[in-house]
Length: 368
Image 1: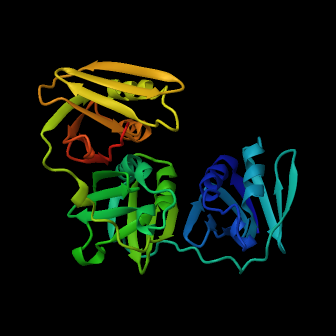
Image 2: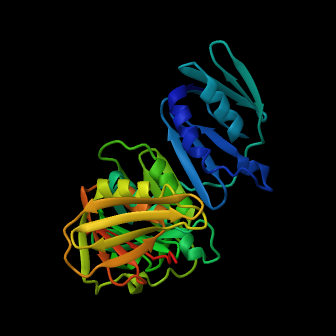
């Protein structure tokens, strides 16, 4: 195999591919990428057996077709540090040579033919969605997924499709984020399972795909896998097994205390009031009374902080405590100037809404 690469295009591809490669694995071949040179393009694949990426690079000049399997971290480091516009890659019998204008590297790879098959997208899509819409939705919910939980279903994001609307729902048991985005092509009703849960890692990969205006994501379900194709990238992933919680049951619908708040001012107040909290007193208190909202935080060994905001409010006064980071996480992803905060009693969840397409449920904490 002999190929001349545009270094920038190769570096961009490896930046995405290496995020799949496991740092530790009993199978060393999974720490490699598979490079296959065809007539006019090169495909590079990576997988950890749960998630895979099939990346097509067209900014190449293929002089000789072939295949090589090389360690991903070594190749990525060489490409990242190179100063050449064009890099030449030549491979034979498990050895890969990379040449620049003043450099020559030799990497020992593995014999072709043993790398796991990474799916590509061949058939028509079940449904389609603009990449910008999907990435905006990912940004508004991915942060609320559980990081490590024995309840595997909440380690992913629930996809619910009704007509040409896709709802993405994530929870870690202490908070819940739900956002809704538009599809460009709706699926046939019987093609989509009710409990479609996509791993958080897969969602994060899709969020990293470089966006070009009008890029469309094609999605296909095959057995227990989801294939997500956009431009020259196909992300394949096993779906999360298990039953997603009945999240509708915890979204309050009967609250009578409602405030319209400035997103920027509330975000600043939450950040400032949390500066003097500690691990032991990890909470901020929202004290709401007529036309005034006070954010406060304190720690016995450090001190206390108060930030006051003028608001329009004439309902019953209330005090409620929240984890400041959970509160800040929600406000960070709201793009509008204002959002709604709805409250019931001090021991019931807070509800944050922005328009018709974003809501966030946050469990209260006791501040003693």
